[in-house]
Image 1 (cartoon, helix red, strand yellow):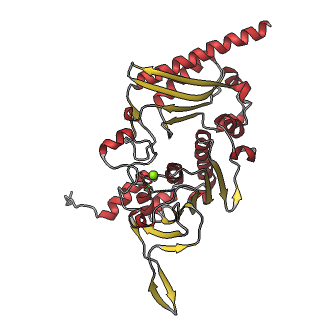
Image 2 (image 1 turned 60 degrees about the vertical axis):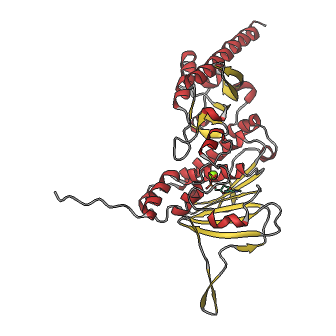
Image 3 (image 1 turned 120 degrees about the vertical axis):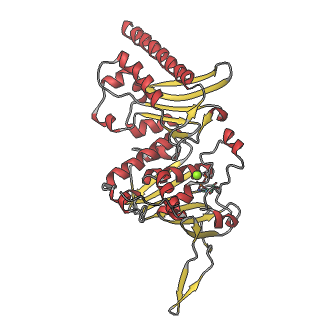
Length: 371
Ligand code: ADP
Ligand code: MG
């Protein structure tokens, strides 16, 4: 066999490969945009889709906006307003921190940003490609003329980020997304999870200008709390099905664990209906990030399995707050998984609290039956 020479890939190819890791599908792009909007202090977030986000994914927020002077470097790699040095990573309280999302998105889509920063009378529009601000050309009298790359326009305060033709330059990735409905459902599920953990924020999702059902009752969208939103989204009689879980304790005598959440009781599992099984069952936020933790899920499932013999899946929503310095957010390109110190202790504490809730709940049931 002929030995091939080793050559360095060109910069654009390297960036496209890396971008494909951060942005795996429309949902991962959406998650980044949602987190940016929340980081910007938005109280209203609107999401518009075409073809499940593949043709168009537009997020409009009413957050602080982006300074016009920063637009030229917005999509360069590692440009961020949230982190200044590596040591800041220890205490990062925003979702974003490495300035990689918008840059990656610009390598795999047509990206347009419109932003009206707080205090400005005007909005500004800019297009980006491969990490760089594009210079749009306009046609005048049949001649191509270069325009300013950032165009002032009339707008409203906040930011609109538009991702067009996601993966237009990655045909094999593009082919792997056949079902629009699957991508739409994934997006709706992510928005629902964020809406539960951010009940002060109003969320709206539309596809082809038509509103998609995020909540059953539209009023709850505006002024909800986590519990109301869970009830609306999952059609749950929350009083009948859910326990409130609240933990505030010192772990290992060294750091504080705070958790607020809701878990389904044992009756819920026994009565599980068809509709429940389609929903995500374990919603975990650690320091405001939607993450997965397989270990925690398995340990908690054990508690249920010991008590319920049916196959019903429980519902859990946890908002876990740990000291930022104990959480390493930098372990996964999509920030989907996080590592934290004393993981076994943290999980053990949560499991014990759930066991206690169940014993208390059973006691109550017994008393009710006796009365
Ligand atoms: P990161 O969030 O890690 O900083 P991003 O690439 O997601 O990196 O965003 C780069 C920067 O762009 C952010 O640090 C922030 O200053 C700005 N930005 C992005 N989206 C928004 C938004 N919706 N509102 C205000 N600022 C934003
Ligand atoms: Mg970000």
